[in-house]
Structures are given as C-alpha cells and as structure tokens.
Length: 182
Image 1 (spheres, rainbow, N blue to C red):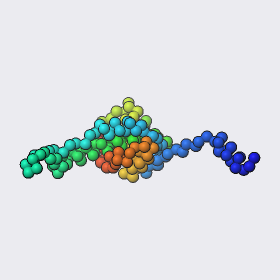
Image 2: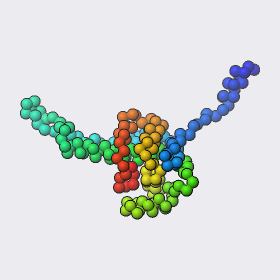
Image 3: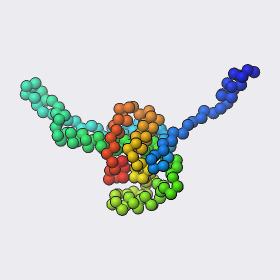
Image 4: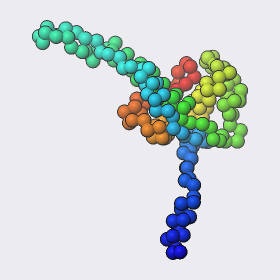
C-alpha cells in the first residue's frame, strides 16, 4: 500500500466536517449563523410590495405617465424601504441565527434584566413569546452597531442563498421600531 492509498483511505473514512458560522458582535455576544428558509424570506419580502407612483395624463403624449417625483410618493417609498428592510432583517435574525455565547455578566434573552430596561422605555413587550424575546434581545442588547447588523445580514443571506437584490432590500438600518425589532 502506497502513501497515496493510505491518505485516500483516511480521507474516505473521515466524516465531512461542518464548520460553524459564528458571528461575533461588538457586544461580545456570539451568534451561530444558519440557513434561513429562503421561501420564508421571500414571503417576508413579498409582504411589503413597493408602492406604485401616481400617474398623470400627459396631454402632449396623449397618455398617462408615472410621476416618480411626486413628494407623497417619495415619502411612501421611504416608508416602504424602512418597513421592508426592518422586516427582512428581523427575519434574518429570527430564522437565521441562534445564541452561541454571551460575555460573563451579560443578560441572556430569557433574563428579565434587559426586559426591565425595555419596559422602562414604555415599549410594548411580549415576554411570554420566546421568539419575541430572542429577536428583541438581539436588536436591543446584542447588536450595538450597524456593522453588527451587516455581519448578520451578509452571513445569513449567504448561507440561505438569498439573491443579492433581496439582500439589498435590507441595506438601510433605520433603527428600532415600536414592536421591538430592528
């Protein structure tokens, strides 16, 4: 038996090693990235259709034309971008991450310590929902910077094989919403 035969035999007997995709956040929290169901992500995006611009009748051309410069339309478009980016980021966090570790002394999602801070801000809470706790804890305590959100977005989207244009729907980070999500 040659050295090559031995190496090939050893390689064949080894189980494939699956590397963990860890995301270390600036808070010291470490999340494990996993594949989020692509169809679920697409449904989230589909729930936020882009608004249509208003139309006006152009007498010179004898037909209706869209007016993408309409101030009300521009405002609706901004609101759409905020809502859809919030929704896709929330989906990527909830469906595509799980808690790996927290720094010593850092409150975990199941802790009431961070929840007390949340309530002091008079924000609505659903503490009996494990998913609400996790998503809100990640966005309220664990994620401290825009770079943290970008790490989560990029890694989970890559693992989930989400098309680049869908990822770009989450390219703006407008801040917290009243439901406790991004």
